[in-house]
Amino acid sequence: MDNYTEMNAKTIDRWVEGGWEWGTPVSAEECAKARRGEWNVLLTPTRFVPKDWFPPMKGLKLLGLASGGGQQMPLFSILGADCTVMDLSDRQLESERIVSQREGYSINIIKADMTKRFPFEDGSFDLIFHPVSNVYVEDVYHVWRECYRVLRPGGVLLSGLCNGINFLFDSWKRPLTVANKLPFNPLKDPALMKKLADEDSTVQFSHTFDEQIGGQLKAGFVITGAYEDYNNEPGCAIPEDGIPTYWATRAIKL
Image (cartoon, rainbow, N blue to C red; front, side, top):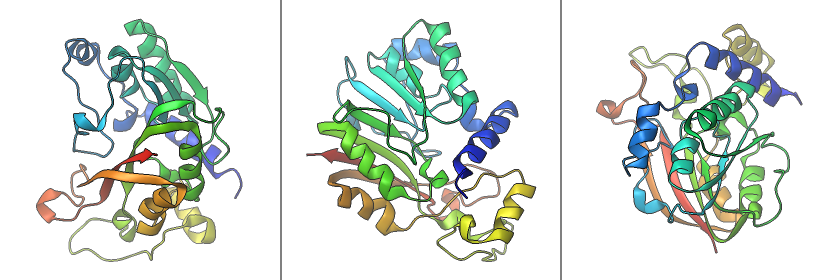
């Protein structure tokens, strides 16, 4: 299905209208704290990104890749970064416009599909901030290659990644029952596509360690930091279960 990314964007628009957690912009209070140097951002649901993963923000050419929603870009902009946000959801991008107008900073807002060639010249950015969003993309190798292309030598890629465990189960009701095989790919299963449509869900994909970590290495990155994280939704796998469901990585283009 060629238009699955457009379908996803429209679904996410509806989620944002319904109060989706990852579509709720930062408050004026959070922006005021950032001006005082008090800030934190997430690549994955619960663990804040270490501050030493970031280069100095002042003048940093920063791309928020599939990172719309007015959650991280406002803080980076306030801290002095020159930010561009790229997303396919109109509502997520509108949130970026609203917050930038409210807080009085400039941001370059780009509507684009990350399954296509990124609309930027080679070596355009010093840092890419890519929260968990490549679950909406079948071919993550393409994403890593494009990230490498648009980063400058020495540029940093910060990524939030789903490790695939969430796709095993249709429900986190205990005892857990494996319902799906991995890799999870609805494009290869018409019945699964229908089920997702009936549930107003997005078309999502699980990806292997080879794709997520090996894919970055294959693109030419050197990984310099990593950590695991957990779901934050009630009833899902949480830290008390000891079941990590996400990874975050810091990688450098040498």
